[in-house]
Length: 140
Image 1 (cartoon, rainbow, N blue to C red):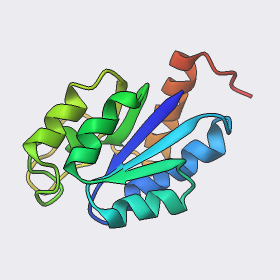
Image 2: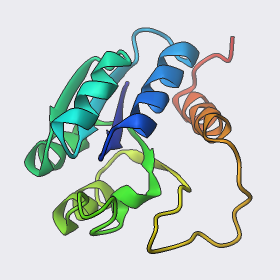
Image 3: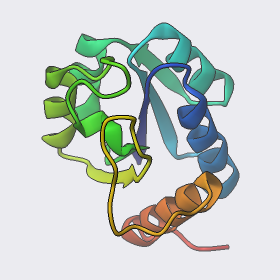
């Protein structure tokens, strides 16, 4: 199973996601770090992703390797993350074959209405629980 984690800017959210995936899932799960820039990818790699790639083309080419895609919701919104999410990145992620788990993290130019605020660690844990269920992994 391959899980793609997509992030941009400083990569802090992506690094948190990778860290929790490593803590809560078996070691044979492959984590693919896809950053909109090298800094984001590097931070996810330091959090123990298996492989990483940076930039628009790398994301567009690699995203379809993933069985699951875990990222902030901004990755499917063109021009979010201060413009780092290009329309082609947003389209590639939204149209990718993998099951998408998007964290409801507000951006300065939009707000997600009707969703109860939860700490990021709880959001990530909820996403991992969905991955475990859909992938048929034991919940040891």
